[in-house]
Image (cartoon, rainbow, N blue to C red):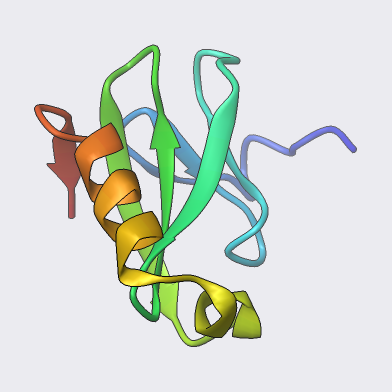
Length: 83
């Protein structure tokens, strides 16, 4: 689906869609969705940035361990958090 520029909401290099899973990098880089606890985040590894997109929106965080959350946190160490 193509995005209409008038309908685009953006947060720096992230283009926000209609729901948390519809977040893209403005530069066309691949993004990834991950959890830290009940919080959901999207990161762009090429831009080295990440954003918070919500909490407890998906139940998958309940099946993850603190080790997974720590690895996810470590994976964005040094990245810029965009509010």
